[in-house]
Image (tube, rainbow, N blue to C red):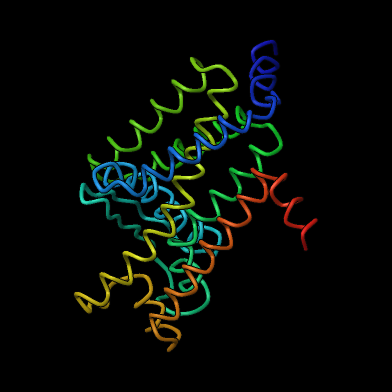
Length: 244
């Protein structure tokens, strides 16, 4: 019981708000990681993990059978599920991929705005553990284990301010990374004209053009970025309201 109580105390710990310079620096670090090509290729694996996790979660919630997830060294991934090849379940499963990182960033911003940086880290560990049992290739296993090691290190070795800073930087990576991934998707569709992307599969299922689905992904990413900014910088929102 003491162990459970101590664990819950860690999870429910409320950290003080980050000073504005720390907050700005953390967001800037996440944005730079997404904008710098060499760094982006590394951190994009985190976006891919959430992307494929979104597919997997949506598949389970819509009654499909999740067969496994693969992560590749070129930062692509593949989630395999069985069930009807058409219908709402398949549409939701496909729609969940590119929207998952943006929605995850918004959820992380909400936890951080309430001071639950430690809770965010434990939530990440739980999600990575669930992801781990679905991985079906060695590179994917390596990526998830590195993620687990990083989050465990921050959870147990970092002080609350640094935990919050890490959480904000990760939130920025997922938020800005989700938007960049959507834009890269459209560039890839224009260059190769393949029909295997999530947007093109949605187009085949719904008869709505793939570019419209890419637009949906972009709009969700922008909306989540705006929501995250409002949560992390409430003083800016109040200032905007006063001018409005």
